[in-house]
Image 1 (cartoon, rainbow, N blue to C red):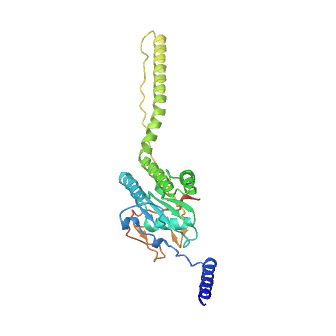
Image 2 (spheres, one colour; image 1 turned 90 degrees about the vertical axis):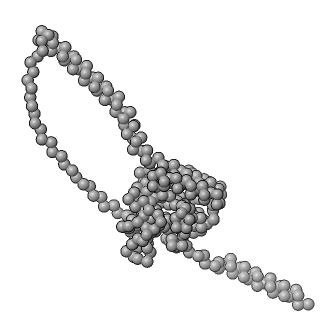
Image 3 (cartoon, one colour; image 1 turned 60 degrees about the vertical axis):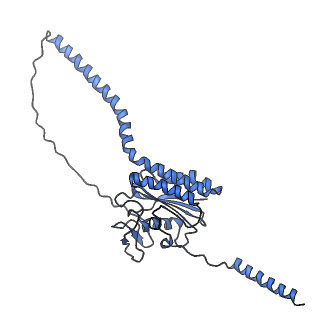
Length: 291
């Protein structure tokens, strides 16, 4: 007789509990930059997949690409996925702070890149060190995100988007060491023909004048007076010191570290301790996008 009543009571409390969870969801765990595992310290890799968006095979592929790049010219790329970034004011702030906390890139070159995906924010951020911004300008980074990453993310192809974005970054940074040589060759191709034309013109002018002198003086050489001119060349040198203002996040200057390593958040002065990346820093360069 009490069996149906018991079922009704249990069903009633289940409904109440379900409504409570829907109306008042449990607070999510706010991930801070200190909570993100450093891949260099964990397994010597470059990828941290907290949001579980990548397969083991894809992680291996990304680590291989970035390791080859780092061995080639010292550039460092970290690929990070996180569930959310609500511990920071914006995903951009979270990305900049994580970049400088780890010290991505070599200290003397600032040639680091952080490729971060926040799953619940539906946000992609790519942070760049100042040393790579001639290759990866803010406009270039935003175009990369808009054309290579976001279209795939909108289709739910997260692995493909992350691989495509990382491949584009690696390809761009691999070409950096050949940029100067390419410029020199290009300038040479332009200048050499002009130089040859000028020399030919001068040679023809000289011959024409020589023939003219010969006719004027009956074929004899015109007497020449030699002048010796002494010139004093003075050289001047100057130094240009630019004070670049950098954006501060979380109470510290994002590029103020004086030694390699990761940012020590316990110190408000922004001191650095020994880290596993190269000790680089970012002044806020890069770009981002939503999907």
